[in-house]
Image 1: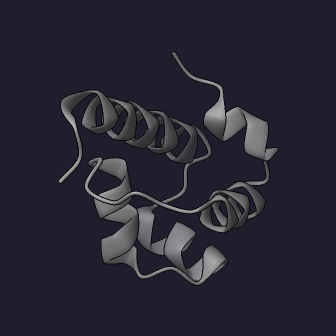
Image 2: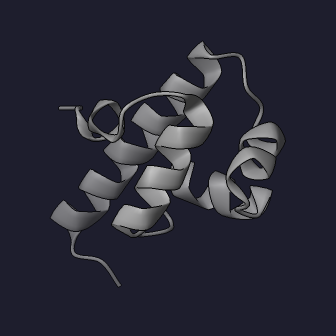
Length: 75
């Protein structure tokens, strides 16, 4: 179980990821197909329920056609 500060960070990352994805007009299923991640995991990441690895960040960034820094650059 994540500490509340950790959970807040996961939630903010998930919200940011969702915003980037929606800004590109990409559905969760399409993103999942582009980066070989199950669509239910995309949903869990966006809801802050999944702590991901740097390799997953790289896959998501590639699928969204952004630099990994963009996914990690949020307040």
